[in-house]
Amino acid sequence: MRHDLDWLKTTLIRRGIPVRQACRLVGELADHVEDAENDLLLAGKSPREAALLAREKLGGMELLADEISTCFAKRTFWGKHPVLSFVLLPLFSFALIPIVPIVTGNLLVRFLDRLKEQGIGYDLQAVLSYCNNGFLAYQYLLAAVCAAGFIGIATRYACSMKWAAAATGILAVLGGLLVSVLTVGPPVHAGAHLSGTITLGFELSDMFSPERIVRFSLPLAMFALLAGKNVWHGYIKPTMTRG
Image (tube, rainbow, N blue to C red; front, side):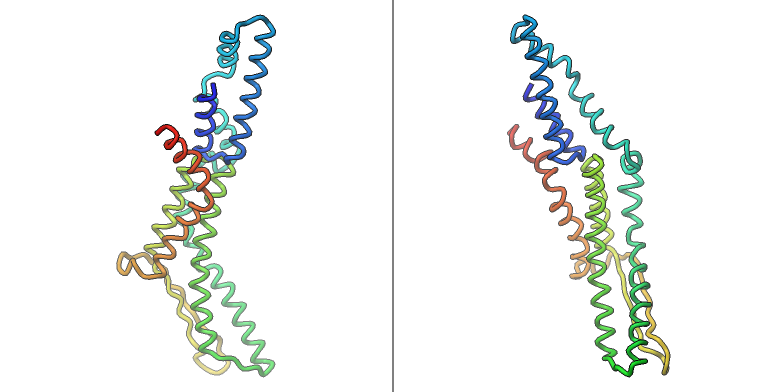
């Protein structure tokens, strides 16, 4: 019986149920089986008969795993539409890149205008450098946040860890192929504002630039950090135990 319950726990973890929750569910099932076995012993059954009958009441482990994971997943949009949630959405996640720079760019222009109105000068080159460095850091942050979001959804709503791995893999590949350039120009005449453009695209050349390596590595690092426990208890540890 212990082997069956261990298999159930491993299967639930692989399907995305958090480790603590999977252990709690399996523990409750073990208590239920033990109570049923004790009742059968009090009814006059032999220990062997009691164990077999209690095990039969629990039903098939594969069916039980399907019912538990389906119960978790089907309650949410993410579980009902995993391909949309963990394949298509990651593919379009980099379309979010221009949104924050556009908003922050407008705020920055207003801030610089306010400084000018108050007679406070500023170093234009420092502003341009700040814009480019901030844009680069923003891309890294976006890659990490998107990866953490998809992993969190998969583990919270009992979607398979394979879907979380698919989402982070897509983010990593897109990050490695992405070419994004922010061009900020000085005011073209007195009284004009800063101007800027964002260029996005994908290309295979220069794939080992530091920026691309970081964008490729960040989603994978987030997967190792946030889903590592599920992967360890659901895949690696059971394999080592069997070996």
